[in-house]
Image 1 (cartoon, rainbow, N blue to C red):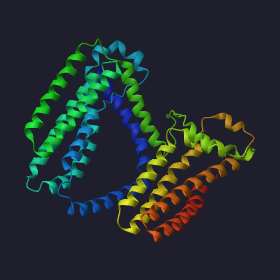
Image 2 (image 1 turned 120 degrees about the vertical axis):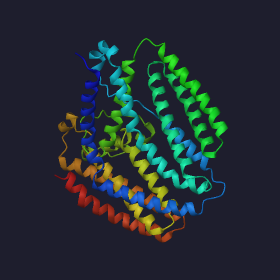
Image 3 (image 1 turned 180 degrees about the vertical axis):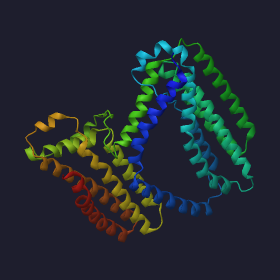
Image 4 (image 1 turned 30 degrees about the vertical axis):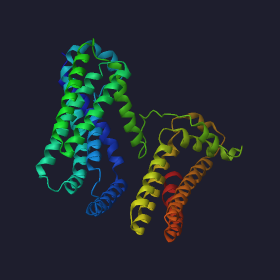
Length: 404
């Protein structure tokens, strides 16, 4: 006899085994050291910044907006798979305990973002409102948890509606109301916070009534949502290890392709062209490279100490270069590449060349950023240290990783 509760436990155990296997690679020693360094530096400068907090700093807008976004983003993890479209539809009337457990799991797994935001904004809240007692902020966090649960349930109800426009409109309305509630709550305007909460309650009841009129569960939508979230996780994990479950996404980006594909029409440049196109059109590499480049630039720009600027420049240069090494395995499932009349050494040199070019571009951009801040010594040092790091990284790590 089908037991939905037991089935969820089996599916949950398999899911945890799958994700924990890749999390070990994501949070390896390199990332752990980098995260510890980031958190320590951010906490130090955060405390210094709070000591000189402007009088009219928009604390309520920042905290309220962040809490509103976090409670609005409440996806339901059902852990459903594509075969369930065939084998579970017949047992839909017995799936109540399964989906109840899925809602509980979704709520618990998303708490870390709320707890992290609550801990991060605590010092800012007390610095902006020193006359308030500590339990006021704790009550605000308790209300955040309640709204998180409400939004999660509302999202589940709206997943019974197939029309994406209806779901998006409902999501936008709840997002505005969530932000307004926490904005007024942080400012201490409890009357307006109560009014917006009542309006939210009407939207919540409307979602319940609309979902109750639906004939049943939209199974294909639930499977697609969960598959999309797992593919996002696999894309992140693929930056650290080989993920056979990953379905690569290809994006056109015609103008970038036209700019980067200009290589000599020669056999030895075959993989020069292939790696460039993969870097641009894949859904992973260009975005990751750009994000790390921008975040590193922001650290360099805002941190006042020049030596810490240089440390962050090298750290982000390392992180970018380390992530790009996985390009070598990007075409591992394409057997046609083995038919190319090109030696393995040509393929390896092409990867090393691209890594060197990307790292040098990042180094030069950071040097230009130093120069724009009139940190001339820092600009020269980052060029020298960056070039030394690139040489050491490629010959000390990439060669051992690729030249096998």
